[in-house]
Length: 399
Ligand SMILES: Cc1ncc(COP(=O)(O)O)c(C=O)c1O
Image (cartoon, rainbow, N blue to C red; front, side, top):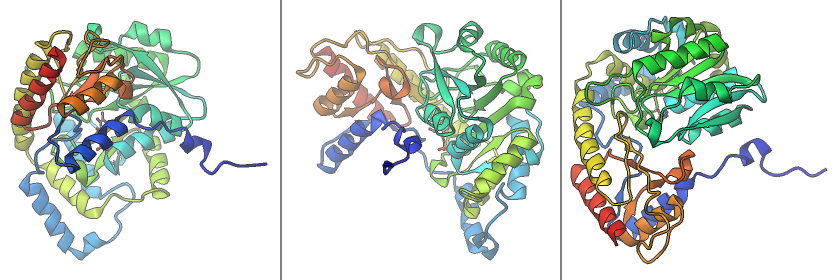
């Protein structure tokens, strides 16, 4: 009997469709070519000073040179519970909190802890690409539920019900969304939450962008508007996007105590605790004020409006106004097949290549997110670069 070198589980992980573009953009920059990248999935601001200072102090304390409990520093678990009550109104105890290496590990822990082989998870599409991979790695089956700009990239109870089968164990819910910038209004969050509770489904709800919502909108937390869901709900969050702390790698999952206890066991055999120094930084972040977050949100909002306006004015491009996070997800369906930069791109994957080669603009093709015909453009870049990049893109598409 022969065995392959790579396990079928890991071998099945799809190569990210963004990698080719990203690698080429980096090679062009290295060759001295000016490239404007709309690929960033992280704030372009430094982490606020008081958070960095807390980490510097922690690094000097020998106690920080040791392991912490796997589930995280008790003070941080407590502070995350308090922050959650403050920001979303969800009341939880500190033993419902597991501190993880970023939101990403919280997602992996959640699915590994909840899913048995063959369990299906409903994943509204377009989705952030890690979700289906994380579900599949845990032995589950991701079931995309398609949405488009006509519905504001939001799914509905009817659509979800149509996709539900006897194997459906959970729903993944993300609002505001990466990659679409969609935000569900409170009544829709409530309707979906009630449906899930009645159907006996688990909900894994990702609140990474809770503070990055614009205008008079607000993000609501599903277990707050549907309290009966709390017994079967996992909340994912992190300091990454809220405090410009993507590199510190601190996130958390909030879940019923039996799920947290099981996930702590899992994490104790994989990564153990999150870096002690990073936990000290996260403690300063979540116990501090949100002033810096609000300042960053102001800048994102300005760029969001500019990007939406510039994209919408390009012939053949339509753009749903992003309501949250820091991404626009325009449709390029109206320009595909036309001659652009000497080529005739038929897909957004090909269009992204042409944009990079002919205009030095990096966009992430929608294929990467289960949304062909669209592309993701981050507005977490400087106002000047944003205008420069979109001007180049507009000229390219105008021929
Ligand atoms: C919706 C969503 N969830 C989770 C994450 C993971 O964040 P982290 O860097 O904390 O692992 C991201 C990062 O892009 C995201 O967009």
